[in-house]
Length: 553
Image 1 (cartoon, rainbow, N blue to C red):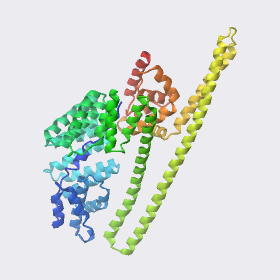
Image 2: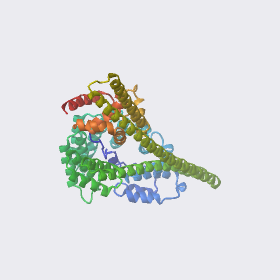
Image 3: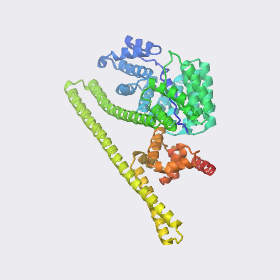
Image 4: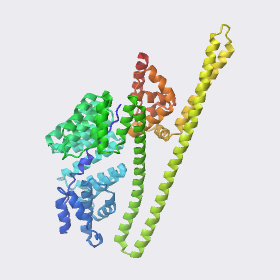
């Protein structure tokens, strides 16, 4: 089954329509920024960044500046982290009955969501809704907050609550564009629950209203997402139709989204049209060389064609890009830590205005940055050492497996000779059979041990800890982690998989992965979580399908 990736869940579209607010500041420069936000957010952000002496501003202007900076940053689709300290100031400045307090809470929530703290983001936006009870006429604000809340509840796997909230957002959607966003988000949640019919129905409604809006970006995004939904539920022909509609309507004015090309390239692999697949996958890399999944798909395709040299090349590139992305994520974490210390400096500067104290804080920040850098370097060294040890273990295990396999073959040959003799020595035959059985058990144990040494096995076991957790809140394995699990498992269990593929040609990659996990004695619920299911219903269905496939040969 193709990975279910929604490249744009429409929350990002909210960033270009966030509301300006009525503030009490009379500062002419800030009022100019407010007037530019809707049509020229980049110019507004430039003006704000050129206002360098914030401590000279009155508190009312500083709070106004904080909200304008957050809105301008958001509309330019930049991270909100640099606005953190100023948003905290605005939250302290505005009263609980001020509409501006709701705006500050909303942006603070979006910042927290960007830092993967969805529960805190939800809490801030619920508080914003409480403030807006004093402003019943502000329907647009409610819609935006409900829409974001619905997505965050979905990310937390609270699907019933997410649907309830998204339907609230739909009630406040009065334009075709807003309605398209609401229907998409509802369909997205149904898709996360594997409810095919509902997911497709609501996504088609999203397309319908996107067409009514006549917003080109919205239309392209709606078609693209519908293509992804059809691909998710293995309706490849329909998925290709909508993928083509996107490509046919991309113009120079539209932002080229490499995911569009990846999507249709991956679809063509499913159809077995490899030349077309290669064309679009390589085109996706022209616009986004770091799109790792394109390298993975190319590796899979070349392997299917028997071009193993090319397959290994793309696989190596995929691993290199993934390692680079992992390093970037770690670097981003370091930057977050450093920035928190930098923003602390700004707050202290504004509060005490003491050069001596600032000097001490700067020195502390430098020390902290140095410590963080050392920790990061130690993590890199540890990761390299772990990889080296794993490669050694892999080599040792491979050599031991080869020896075991040779002994198995030798004993099987000896057994065959004994059976061919007229006067068979039954004791000797039984001894040989027992030895072969023992060697096979040892080989399986070695294979299982090797699998247990991998980082992805530890992730699998972490899922296993949820056995007693309510299925509504169980976490499942992410698509990228599932791909890593397949790669690792297929490498370790290659000698187990190869005979299965030769004997049962209809087995898919997911079928083979399922059999390998069973072989590794992974619990049924844990296997289900690896495949994205919160219970074993779908797993039992897979078992039934496997019996049919393996009986047909």
